[in-house]
Image 1 (cartoon, one colour):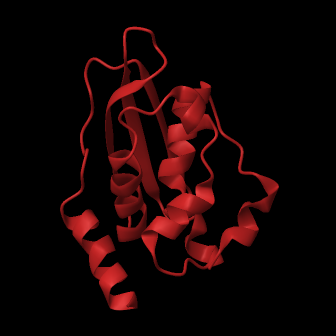
Image 2 (cartoon, rainbow, N blue to C red):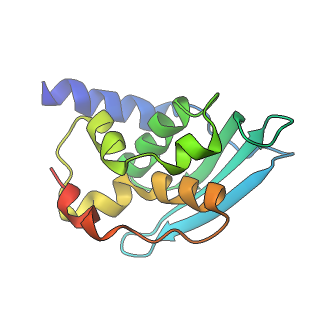
Length: 136
């Protein structure tokens, strides 16, 4: 079963969904993982009321895990309210990746989550204390 999930990750890495910078956009944030050099930015368009995501794009460079994670995460964002996004559990994204993520790769896998939270919260997002216990 692990090979299926690895193929799933590689497919998202090679053919990422929602890759690109939206212009115009309503929300934007970028960040990096200094440990490994992964970089990512995310742009979001909102509905007229400013509360629901209508389009999303991400850009950046990095390892297969960080890029696939962004592709997978952004696939589910259209139609989500900002409150729903703020309430997201990062463990759900790790579960969607489908492979065990060790402590050294956790920040790679969750960089897209961190960038998304920075965009919807309007600034730097601090990792929750329990994040280190999320590894598989």
